[in-house]
Length: 161
Image 1 (cartoon, rainbow, N blue to C red):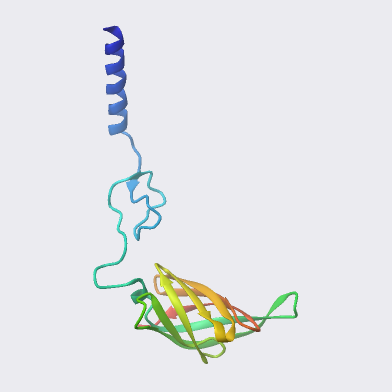
Image 2: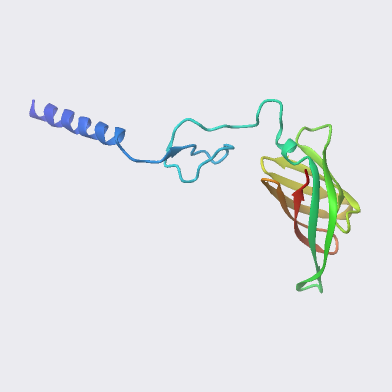
């Protein structure tokens, strides 16, 4: 009988402590679009995927004023060669639904590069010119870095209204 009372008391105290705890609640799943890194307890508010009728790439589509810092190499070290400003346009590609085309991109805006979008990230590749790189979209700013056959590029683009 005493063991039962002690066990029930412990369970009751534990339940009260859990109910009254002060943990910050929010979305605790990193893959969700509304992930909250400071949340300690999940509150069921996580949103996955996109708003109906949109895709990840829709956020990227538009014109960007780009500032591209180009670094050349002597075979060992990289050093700043030039800074280029140009306008690039990101357009949807018909298929698959996560593909885009970056038009007038890089080296004074003279190349078209294909990209694959996932969430807020884009991976750029153009095998013909040995281009590889990636970027991240935050609000209206696209930060990118990529390498081509000759140079290393680091820059950003501001989405134009």
